[in-house]
Length: 157
Image (tube, rainbow, N blue to C red; front, side):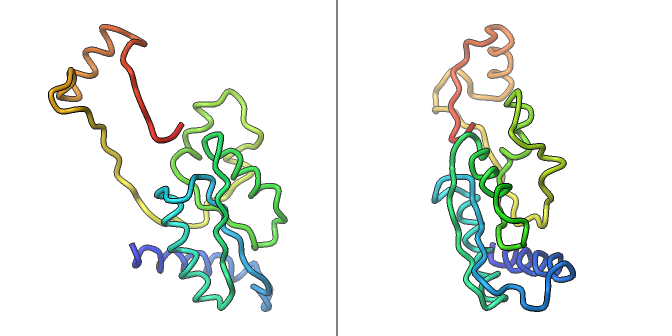
């Protein structure tokens, strides 16, 4: 993870370098994480923030703004001055939100630009041992036979 964070910090610096003045950064940088402290995006954001801060010799502060599948934090980032001092670390909810919500207060394709991929997290589907769905095939078959009746839980949206 440290290698990815270092490479990500370098990519962010490289991408920002041409667009920013010589005196950048002259104040702390804020990294918004639109998820709760301790989440995967939060941990990744803190690692990247440390590397960025070390490289820039300037504090990089992580600010958690969870809620509404990342929408609250995203709005905070979009409402900040577009001066290079506010960044955001987002999870897959950013890509999923247009399909989940009928309307969003922003356009993810027009209002936001991806700066760097900072990590890749595998997800797994699990079930209780001895439960009704020991395989993905058994779950799919049951869901097709009883639409809307299979309970589901998620740590996010």
